[in-house]
Image (cartoon, one colour):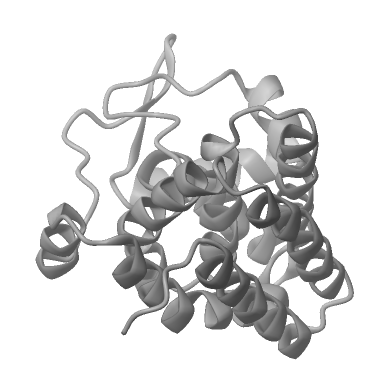
Length: 227
């Protein structure tokens, strides 16, 4: 596969993530114009057009002549019924964090190996934004969700992406609890820096261990240890 072809596939995955994972676009929504979207994704318009063609072929997007590119009205994210049901179950924070401990270190490992440069830069940028929000004492829930979604997406493993509703619920609970525990927020800054350094250097094993330590720190500081 040529480098250009791989890049267009990556961009198609990024746009699909904006629809299915980040929920930036919904069924029936119009995508930004070509210049704006290609700039946001950091690619040429030629690559963007090829990515859009890929998603049109997958029945995700449709091009309406004279109007633009839209997410198809009848587009429905393919979800696993079991996971959809799981995400709807009210689970305790300790159970949710145990799930994170099982899956997220591996996500960090594969994301470090497989992330495109644009995906990696997005992860780093969101991580730096989270640090600033913590230092400013501002809510970081949405950014935390985006950070971990971006890592899951960069694994290029569809099943990992489908676990995000469960992981997202854990993050929501963790951010809420950490507001009352300063040490947990301080650990997040240090842990994220270490994780991002390993990812920048494409050290997959280091990233795996850093993510595991990050979640263990959260479990400890948030007092989520199971009996």
